[in-house]
Image (tube, rainbow, N blue to C red):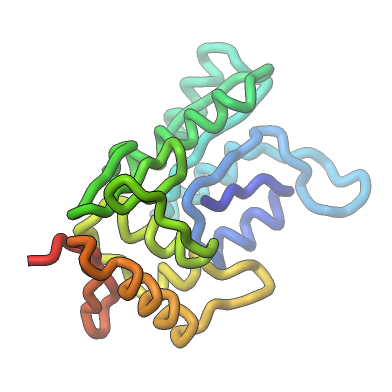
Length: 204
């Protein structure tokens, strides 16, 4: 999961060049990274995202918690709205909820003997925990959210890339190959759709 929580100018730039799972948006943002930069409205960023067709889930955090202000945020395209003060565990729970809605995924997902528990962030094969390096874990997480959904190769690479390091096609293929070996006899298989991407399905 990637969470964007920065100044307005940087947010606009990064949203234009990078794919994100979710945006955690404060309605009172500094306009830029410059010292003494004026404050700007995160609501304007949200409206621009939706006008451009960007459907990235957005959780708004704000000290503005009157009913009319919550309505304005939701009408502008927010998926959820949480007023300050708040508990961090509630923020995390709300993020998980809007991600599930956006991905059409349940907390527990299973194909064959492979099971994903999203709340525990854990894969199991039968009764055994499947230990995976971070990148392989994220690849499998995307494929299982939900399973049967075709994942575009470029979008998958973008989600796994950091801001200063791009994940190339060869590296992605390596992660997929390693996962295929680890999932042998699991009843789950990762298929390549040439020119499109990947999908994980139950092995027939």
